[in-house]
Image (cartoon, rainbow, N blue to C red; front, side, top):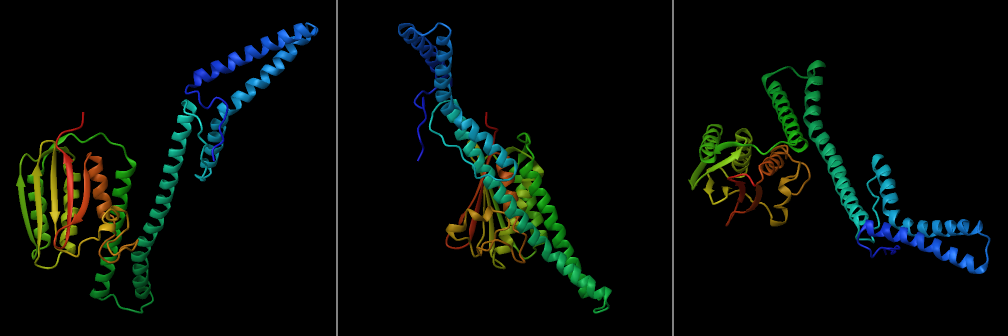
Length: 336
């Protein structure tokens, strides 16, 4: 339970300091007057007045500056990696507002620290798997346990490619999350870009069936290479989970202030309770924290960061009666 401090009800730090000064002057005047009536020596009156005024000021100022001292201790603890410190907020003045901001910052830093540790652990696990496989194959070749036949070399190449792709995705996600860039200002025709991405997907997946429909104005101010990466990841994901021979539908619609792109597949879909988690790093639809052989679990996390960088939103819902629908909304013009 928060313990109230003196002057907590005063809503301004200036007003509080004014009260402290007035209190000090008042105590000095009262003590001088009392000393005069009691016949105290002239030289002792200012000494007693100053002492009592100092005690009054210390009593009032102690409560005012308590949050500042707590924040100083908390900052020192944060420097050592401890983000548990919180400041007790009982006043509504500028110091109280600063204390509330400090508590929010401490909570956000604690969450960032947790996510960073989880990210490092997951990344280490994902990197260790292909590295261990490569090391095992190489040790067998060096020890002449197995011959360098095409099948073994093909397996090693697949592991190396998986490792390379994972490293590229990790670096890409790190750049997206750590850099601060201005809002992209290149006019991109989303309809033309989607046609290009769909054509590329059909080349990579000859047996796939992809339909593309567009309507309305589809121009957005964006980084074209990032949007290409965004829609390539989303459509590639849909093709990976869709049953062989089923249709993947891509629909783009231009509205008054934004462009909405929906990609629907007929795969297993995502459970409603998991639809927000698919954008977490190293998370897969079966509920495990790490991905299996399908991918590194970073594609949708990268997509989310790209969309947010452009001031848009991305969400995943069910595609009735089965499958999933990924909806990307991008502003067609920058916010003023």
